[in-house]
Length: 168
Image (cartoon, rainbow, N blue to C red; front, side):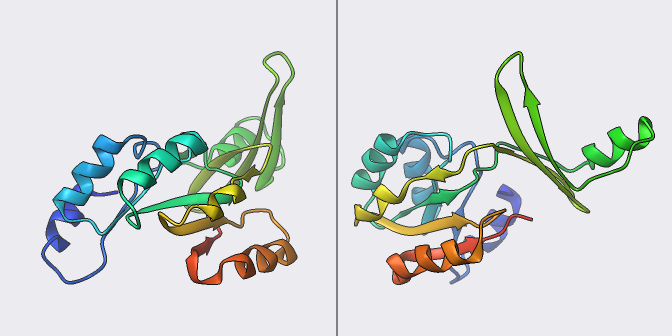
């Protein structure tokens, strides 16, 4: 995510993966970072599965994508839940579900020492992308998902699962 760090390691013989969650949205960006020297680009969780297919067809074995789990909507380096609850003298949970009845928006919010992350209420299921051999690796976000499900998912295409990451 840090372009300065990328420039420092650019000429090193290490695998370089470019990832800025909401920016890997089109083939121009993917092309730019591959041309700059990245080995792989992680696609944004904000684009459609068709767009993921289109980009991976243009850059076979050069893109990585999320295929399952809660997708990070927003991250703040501040402890938003603790700050709110401290201000209003409330107990401070580290997990919370926010339901906005007026706008019909629902978020799962999780706070840890490093900050606060917002997730949608529904789990993203992009398992149909496993059929795409042009995608180099897949990422599963294990936040708030039972371990049995993770084991099942990992066994589907063991060699292609880059990471089962728990953002928390």
